[in-house]
Length: 153
Image (cartoon, rainbow, N blue to C red; front, side):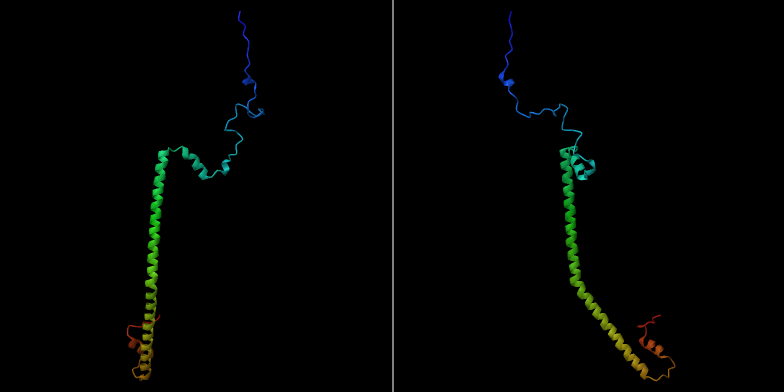
């Protein structure tokens, strides 16, 4: 009869490299554990949106990104053009409008001075005339001015 003998390989008798302390190792440990550093109260909207990126397929994400970039570019162009237009209009208004407003105000002052001089001349004429007409001085001034001056009240 044949007798079998066990021959032990030297390779299996050597200790393996690695941690010597196997007390805390179990087969049930995984990357998902109950003692996590994750706190949902501190999660921001950006974190949530970043986590959802894997749900949307890459082609759809690329399409959405292209549309968003095109829209942002169009909005930027419109705002840039609008700003430049407002700059041109405002500077033109200042360059043309301020001198015109100053000359208009000066013209109004000249017109008022002419009216005042006319009224002084008429007032002098009325006071130097004799009062035989029987009308009051106010009526004489009113008739001399015609429709230019209206009563305040």
